[in-house]
Image 1: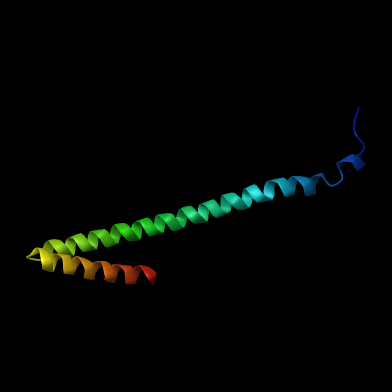
Image 2 (image 1 turned 90 degrees about the vertical axis):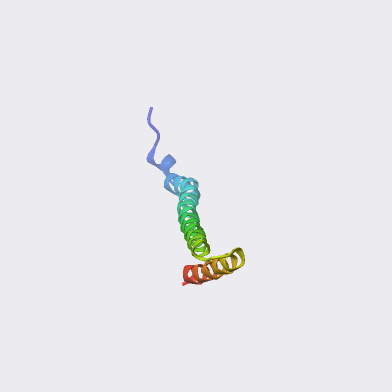
Length: 80
């Protein structure tokens, strides 16, 4: 026995109301993952530049200062 067409009325709206939040959640999850990946790359780059700057210096004090300056430059560049 088949149902009349009037029983299916509104089923698209209900299905959309159920599926739309899940789709929006997945979309936001992808955006969040992209931002995390971008920030991870920025932190890795800053650490690499700071360690390189520190290794080129002679003493511990100047190495620490060079690392701090390299980190600041990298942080400024990441914001742009």
